[in-house]
Length: 228
Image (cartoon, rainbow, N blue to C red; front, side, top):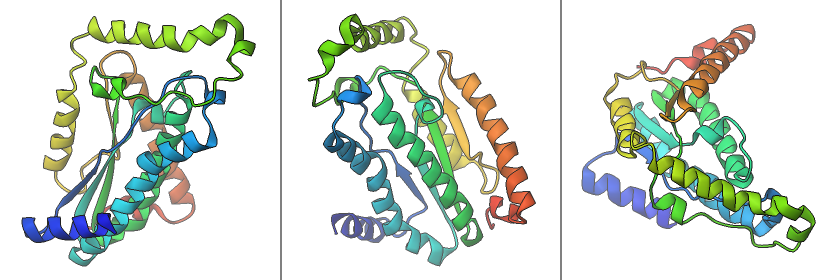
């Protein structure tokens, strides 16, 4: 109810709405086994279900206008798996699928859907990571149980040594997408300068070829083009 009310108030106060940026999210770090079902529910409620709440509140307005842009803050970890981020990656992989489906189902109504995939950045996001609720099995991991903490410390040191990984460039990526003419926006935009971005971009380009081929085989390739 609060989401529906907030969206209505925003539309009223702004005299309209042209873009929704789904940016709220929270990360995790730790052995995947140690995260409880309740941990999973918490992360999915924020990172995925919250997006669905916002979309369901905004899409009717966009559909009526036959126009609108929905942006999703995913992650490079929404494309590949690295250890100790399993729960977070699960939510972002699901988010990518959600956005892909919205892309196809809403293109005929003039609503465009695009995904931004940041790498890791030195922000408060890292300070607010969720850690496992149940470490009762930790002794059974032996020395490897120390690996998550060592990995996180190493990554933070790596970020400090690479100032080019400035979070402002993520904001710039959103602005560039918004400023790009309708129908010319890429479905995915990786934003990373520490070794993931270029590889993820190649992955994305290959997937887009596969997606286009599959939809063509099924006679549904027209869904890839947003109605102008």
